[in-house]
Length: 203
Ligand SMILES: C[S@@+](CC[C@H](N)C(=O)[O-])C[C@H]1O[C@@H](n2cnc3c(N)ncnc32)[C@H](O)[C@@H]1O
Image 1 (cartoon, rainbow, N blue to C red):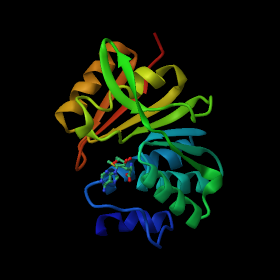
Image 2: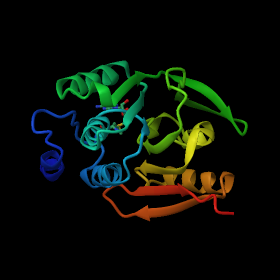
Image 3: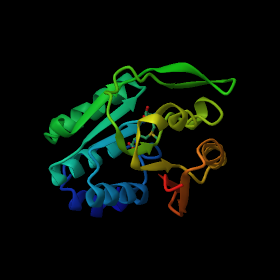
Image 4: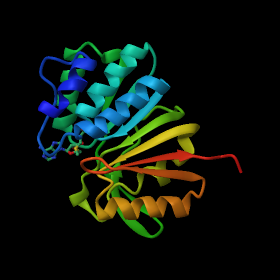
């Protein structure tokens, strides 16, 4: 918890937070997405998985007086837990946590379990944070995020992939870059690795 202290003070999140060792995003990843959110002030933030990321990004939107977080969360209990924290910090206006059960999608001939998109409003996404579904569920668990959401991304959207040091995530980034050649990739050395992707539509 100590590594989260600076962020908690910066965002005034000094009561309980939805922190679970090993499952919550690491402080250095949170630092990157929080700084981006505070400086770029995105209007629509979509995140795959909910928890500490949702709470911190919702607080950033409150500080910005702008923007909203839409979280896709497959675990009903985790969704409820995150909602409780959003309520507790009076951030309802800045975050919607959807219980989005995983459903089968077929992409390039392979089946994946991925979040149902039924609840997600039709909005252009300016910031996308990918920290789920869990890696142990299937090979390249987080791959569907871009094939399924790419058309909804704004020209200036920034995508953050957590756990990017893992072999699966490295492969996912390569697959995305082949499929979407206009993506520009930057890897940041964090505790678990962070891939940052932007769309370059200049050509
Ligand atoms: C890596 S966690 C990240 C959650 C969120 N982005 C955060 O930073 O708090 C991804 C997913 O793991 C699941 N999860 C959370 N805590 C868990 C636990 N203790 N055991 C199993 N799964 C868990 C939830 O469904 C969550 O969406």
